[in-house]
Length: 86
Image 1 (cartoon, rainbow, N blue to C red):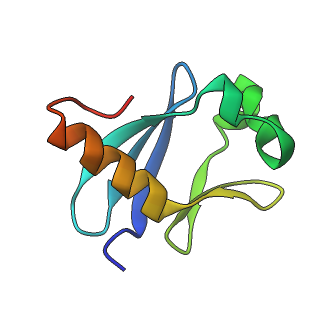
Image 2 (cartoon, rainbow, N blue to C red; image 1 turned 90 degrees about the vertical axis):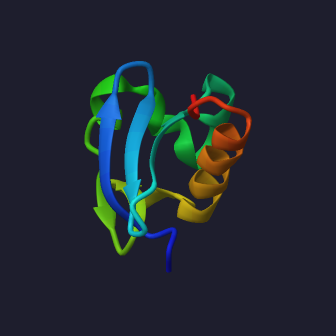
């Protein structure tokens, strides 16, 4: 799918740089309020850095992943508003 992620890189402040299959790039910052339940381990900065791409999704050890279509929509929405996703 066009929203498959081909590159993901952890950056400071629980921010991810992502590149999608169609060439779209952007940054997605995880808010503290999003890092609970299954995503709680992402609150640890060292664990967050262990991000990788698996079958087009941003993934961490322990089967933690984020929906690429939601990240794509978030980045596109920020672009429409004239900024970059943060």
